[in-house]
Length: 233
Image 1 (cartoon, rainbow, N blue to C red):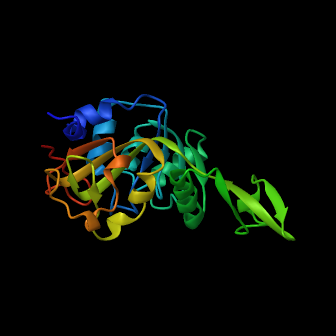
Image 2: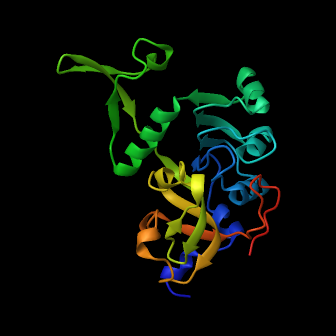
């Protein structure tokens, strides 16, 4: 195995590198683009006291919903949790800390981390509950709120196609948060339906370059959109 091909690994090996207490970005918008196989393995291996950053909380019995139900998540940074009654119950009981950001701000906070910025200035939410904990400055006669970037220890992303170097191609709406998160974490683990040999991907089709990806796991295409099956090869 060459150095460049070592990114293509097993599901168990990839997830075993995540310690207790890690902060983890999870791609997806609802089900599309959510790396269900990686999340199921994370549940199986038992890591706890996690901080998860995801656009939504999935539903109670799929994706990160299973981790929340199992009590493995201490903190959730998200834009909405309305489809996950368990997450709402855990938040109301004080067992899950939830930090909610408007969806556009959440995406930009992640993008800024990937671009290497501290954060950005915005007038969105001034004089509302959104701005309650934010610092503000005045510039050119206008008041701005400071939104810090969000960075994570790990990102788990789902791609339709990859190569052994770690170049990724997404399909349809799976492009949502995955490319942003792949740039905003120290280590990026990608699951893909196909992992091709180096040189098989047309350069113009690559949406996440291999420089951002640490490990790639191939999952069988029979893995359902709801994550009910996670056959790994």
